[in-house]
Length: 568
Image 1 (cartoon, rainbow, N blue to C red):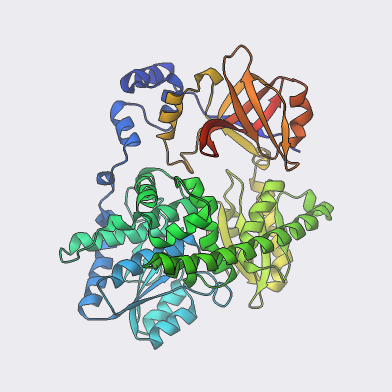
Image 2: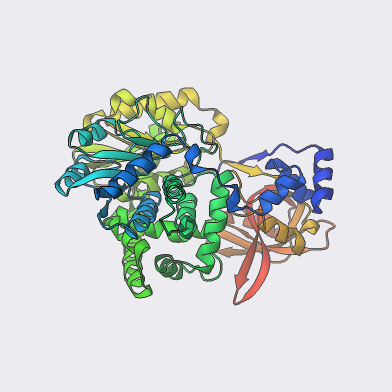
C-alpha cells in the first residue's frame, strides 16, 4: 500500500498563540488550532464559540433577491399556481421540503415536483415544464438546480411560465432567462458568503419573504434542521453562515426533531446526540436512497410528515431502499475494481473512467468514491441511461475535476457540478474518446503528490496534554466539517501498551502510550491490520490521530482514532 503524505498546517507565530491563550484562558494547543482557523483575538473567539443567528447576513444583499420576493408576492396576490421544483439528492429534497412546507402553510395553490433520476435526469427537465404547463402553474421556484438550464427556462417562458432559480452551482457563461437568479457564485453577486447549499439559498429567500411581509406569521428558524442536514450532506464548507446554520440546526435536531428526522435517527441508531458525522453517515444515505432506488418524492413526504406514525412508515421504506442501494453498491464496486485490476493500462493511468451499460445509475457516484479509496485519482463511473452514457465524477483533494471535464466539453451533451463532484452525459460512441481525452487533460494538470493520499495534521500533541478540559474545549469547536475538520494531531515516540487485537481482519484495537508519559489511551486504527506484527513486537511509532468519545454500554471514554502510523 502506498505510504500517505503527512501534510502539516503552518504553525502560527508564538506571540500570536501566547496572546490568544492568555486572552481566552485556553491551552496553547487549543490556541494554536484557533489561530490556524483565523481566530486570533477575544472577539473572534467569542463569535466562533458562540455562533449567533444575529450574525447571519441580510438576505437582500443577494443579487435578484428583491426581484424574487416581488414575483412571489405577485403570484400569491393573483392566486397563481406556484410549483416548487428541486433535485433528487439530499440538498434538493431538503430544499423542496423547506420551501414547499413553508409556502403551503399559508398558500393553497402550490405543489412540488422532483424529476425522476432515470426518466428525466438531473435538474430542470422538459417533462417537468410540460407538466407544470398542463397543471396551470405560472411560476416555478427551482431549488438546487437551474443555473445552467438556459434553453429549458426559455422553453418555459415560451409557455408562459416564469422561473426563479435558487442554485449554488457554478454558473455558465450565459445565465438562464429567469425573472430572478439567486446564486452567490454569480459574478455580479456581492453576497458576502458564497458557500451556501441550495437549501441555504431557499432559506435566505424565506427570510426575505418573512422580512418583507409582516402578515406572514412564520419563523424561518423553525426550518434550520433541514438546512443543517443539507449543508452536512452536500459536503460544503462549514464556515461563515454555514457554520452558524449547522450549529443551530443540529441543536434543533437534538431537541425538537421533526417526525421525519426523528424516525430516521432511530433507524440510523443516532440515539444520543446528532452531529455532522451522524448526518453524513446515518441520515444522508437513507434520504438519498429514495431517489437512487425509487423516487425522491418519498424523501420529501418523509420530511413533511406531520405525525410520528406517518414518518415511521416513510422511514421504513427509505431504509429498505437503502439496504437495496447497499447491495448494488457492493456488487458494482467489486466489478469496477476487477476491471481496473485486469487492465495494465487502467492500473497505470492517472484517472479511472469506467463504463458498463447495466450498472445501476443510482449508485455510480458512490462507486466512484469507493474506487478513489483504492486508487487515489480522479474517477468517473458511467452507465447507460436513455440511450446515452451518463456518469458521476469524483476527485481527490486539491484537484478540480469540474475544470478537467469542462476541457472535454466538446465530447459531452451536458455536464455540471463543482471542483470535487460532477455529473456528465454523452453519446455512447464517445465514451472511449472521452476516456482518452480526460486522461490526457488530468495527466497534464495534476501533480504527482495529489495522486498520493494525504493526512492533514493540525499540530503535534503530547498525549499527557489530553485532559477532560482539553476535550471539552475541543468539542466546542464543532460543528466539524470541510474547512473546519476535526483536528488531527501527530504524536511521536509511541508504543502499544499490552495486546494488539485485530477486528474483522481489517482493523486494530489497542492501548497506546507515549514514552515517558503517564497516560495511556484506547485506540482504534481502521483498515490498518497490516501493522499488527510491528505493533505487537513493541516497535515505537509516530501516529496521526483524532480524539473522540467512545460510548459502550453506557460508559463513556476517550478514544484515539488513528489515521496513520509511521514506524521509527
